[in-house]
Image (tube, rainbow, N blue to C red; front, side, top):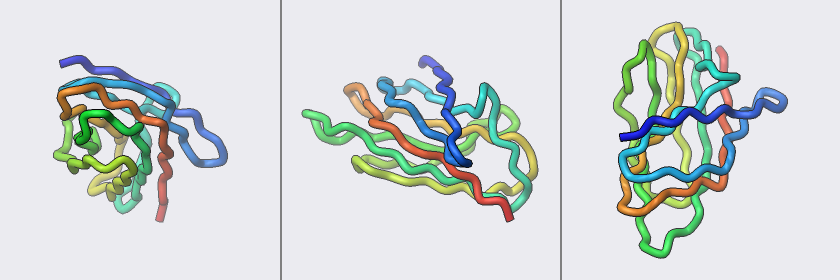
Length: 118
């Protein structure tokens, strides 16, 4: 298992996910200037993303959050376009992750991360 960190590019409160490729069981961690997102309890972090079409078909990923260095159980998705939202149970630093779950590589066209602070 390989772990890769990819920094997002913030523009007007929207964090852009770059085009990336990763493989089965690879863990991709998205960061904000090398760090996670500081959330207060009740804040929500949202992700939308798009994958390139594969010749094989299903491109399963798991997407979720990391809090206190623990991968929280995420959601699985095999659609070309997807979204994920997470509401913080505790205040602290959160990272977003994706894990490849397909036999072939997964290539993200890109995506966006936003934070709703209440």
